[in-house]
Length: 278
Picture (spheres, rainbow, N blue to C red):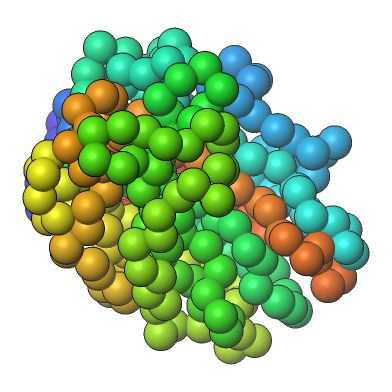
């Protein structure tokens, strides 16, 4: 225990992932998983899709040779699995802090693409507000593929005034897109694949009636893009942020058989930053 707190002090404001989805010692940590647990993912996560074994925990593929998640695409494969964490107050009963409303959120995942990786997959991760049983969304904070070989952030609102207008999950026709921004770092380029990259994003919902919401993301602790004038949810005062998803989804299908790997997944109420495992 002393060693754990000493590590946290050394990292300053950066939070440490506590692993195995255990109750965190730091109240700012909502969820943490280093994928070392042998407990079934279907029992730990609100929803887990392995895509017939495409997305599974595997020994030796994590950071420093630890256990991590392997996402394997076959040539032409579109969906290669996902993990969904739901927390806070919402329409789907959450196992994690179900009576709280979160208006600000940070989340982090390490990702590595195997040597020889080719292409920019469409989806990586998102935070959202689910508002009813059919998963209509009040907002979505997407971190997904940019126009080149990097990542971009693409905020969207499902609210008009004080009313949620979306009627289903990913109701793109009724979403209001708030402005895509692309990061300059090309993590899918040949010189970058093979490296672990720390992807962290931050969402702060707007004050009701004001366009002062925030969305930003970092790679390896370096800020790549930021918007600070977003009207995420208008004057709607329903739930707070209540879900974060990790996705392996490639709209046009993978150009060849290839793999990528995930580790050290953390959701928190303050900045996480790159960090070691305690």
